[in-house]
Image (cartoon, rainbow, N blue to C red; front, side, top):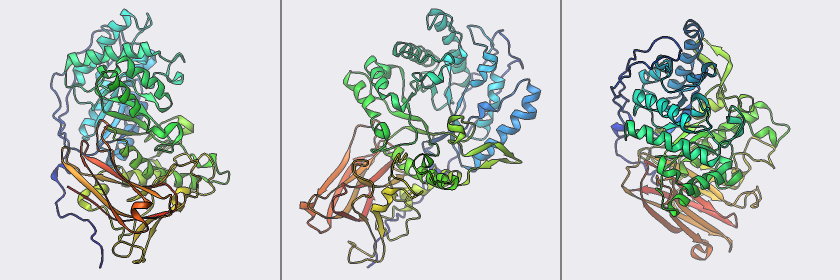
Length: 547
């Protein structure tokens, strides 16, 4: 008898097809950059349909395509921005991260009373409004605000003025505002001197209190820290940073997941745990920057560019389930174009090859983001192929076999080593619980000193926050030391609740046994995780996900 496919008959909810309704606003700013008075502000707030369209944003870097004088911007800047926007639409991007970098022009720092060139900023932000694309706004205060007294009273007066004016003008349109990017990284500072914890706390308090005074509904991100500075994040938590943010921001690249370098980002919730321990608010987290360079040539001298880009495209599917499993409120892909890191290897468009309607694409990575970083392929209403009777398109899509994003050692191919110990077995009814197919895990090719388990995961979108869900599976173990774990992950916006069930060989004794967990969704998604410790074998079948 064929297994059920777990497809549901519920219609796809209209809310996933809703468009954002954005009314453009107009400013009365002068077409110049000077130190006069700020122009009159628009008090009208944009009307936005908050229907969930996913939580995946793209770092678009439109800010780099701006030119002065305005005549040059019209000739050179605007056409370039329009090319990027066409790609954003093609990728079905609903949100981006953009900074107010226009205020950095000629390194002219803003002081209290300075002219703030909103019309020039709107050459980016208004266009995004017109296209129905939401945005998160980086304020970059360390670069745009005059700081003659090292974050003293004069700086505070200047900073509060700039933040207040921007807050009044843009209001709640941004998904969130952030103050300073990677404050502890010397390379992000104009003077090469990282900020101290005291300085970050001061900046954060000034920005938070100023924006909340403008409108309590404005959302504020903490100054996002780089993934290697979790220790600084914990220190900020101990000092009470979560009093002055709605979300805590982090950046993590290349190696995401339990076996990634520097704990692969899985330790970030330690920051929020520590804040709660100290009596401060527990906050959701935002992965404010996430991407990868071409890592394969670092461990395989024979890797061609095609090999490296194929590996990166596979990384994108792996990265998606790993990020979603961590439960972040938003995840920002880095970058569409114009990243300078590692010679531009993070980009999916080649800035040096503009075309009539866009830019030359790095096709493998571009298509992976286009196909995977959206809701539709992952909706629960489309089924989860829990019996593995349908062909899994690729081990980086559908049911994703997780692997080290930066292999570091041991690779001689663009196929991740972790894939070799996890198989989608076909036409073997004797080994399945039902039907003909099942998932089998065996001893990893990559040593267990480098990875901690076999993991196969699937993203499930379209959940209803507040609704209880049940995840069930059949699992069969061989080998006395064999252990398996069924987990639901990423469903708690505060990263605290767990849902997992361990199965030992003693319980299975070579036969299929039932495993089950349940949870209340805090996010609109969850990640199913099938795990095996690599001793003996584990066979998985009949995975169901129901209310």
